[in-house]
Amino acid sequence: MARYLIRRTGEAAVLILVVSFVAFLLVYMAPGGPAILLDPNMTPEDAALMKNLMGLDEPFHVQYWRWLAAIAQGDLGLSLSVRLPVYDIIRQQLPNTMVLATSSLVLAVAISVPLGVIAAAKRNGPVDQAVALLSSFGLAVPAFWFGLLLVIAFSLKLEWLPAGGMATDGDGSFWDVAKHLVLPTLVLATSNMAQLTRHTRSAMISVLRQDYVRTARAKGVSERLTIFRHALRNALVPVLSVIGLLLPQLFGGAAVTETVFAWPGIGQLAVRAAFERDYPVIMGVAMVASAIVILASLLVDLLYACIDPRISVAGKP
Image (spheres, rainbow, N blue to C red):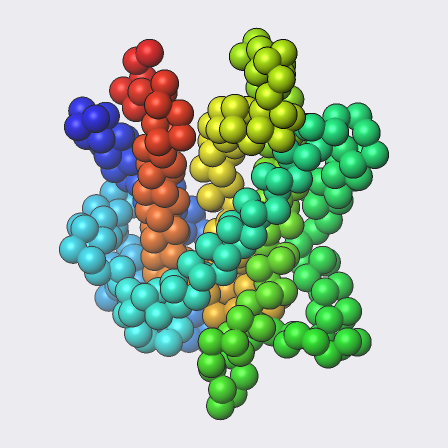
């Protein structure tokens, strides 16, 4: 276990380093620059002077290593638009994104796993076809369009839920935040529910064909007990792998969902920073989000052995 943790930690560190290089390279190659953001009307001479003062006229590798050294010390730089430390901005808005991402993942798992199990148990029947239709809808519907549709239906027409934001001015209670969380959680969870449902169904069908399941049925074990005690546990292993792969999509989808519902998270922060060419914020969000996803993926790998003891984290039988 210790050797595995050391190896996976080293792989995670290398992956974070690669992400940092790619993020910095994309920002470095982007047209314009921070100097133009500070004053769009400045002359070329003033822009050149500003780049010199900010160190932006130095070679790529010099700028990258200086930025990487600052990152290693916990310094994500200074926002060019609001002139505040990027670390403080992200620290303020990251919990909001974590609440949204966690709630949507919990909702997706709570709905998709039972649906996938039922669809597999009722394979090729009306229930299976209905689940397949819902899954296709979840995969095909654009998040921004679905979000606007929910706002029109539940906020403007029925007036059941707020259209956006995280809390009502002057309120901010738990139930008020929960009401604001319903629609963005549903939108962010829709695509994940569709994918998890399909993979759960496929995994369950594969497990239900195994000899030990047939043996349990031949011994007279009830179908419910066969599915939930003998089959589901083994089917959850590939489903857990899919959950690990969905983690990056949660942060990517959060950018769209938070923008549609004005949810004050790092997804909306990244979109706003992109429009404002606030490169320190963009790179800071990329680094923080990638680190969270990589660490969460490591945790998913470690959970394999908990679900199925036959699986060794060392990769040995």
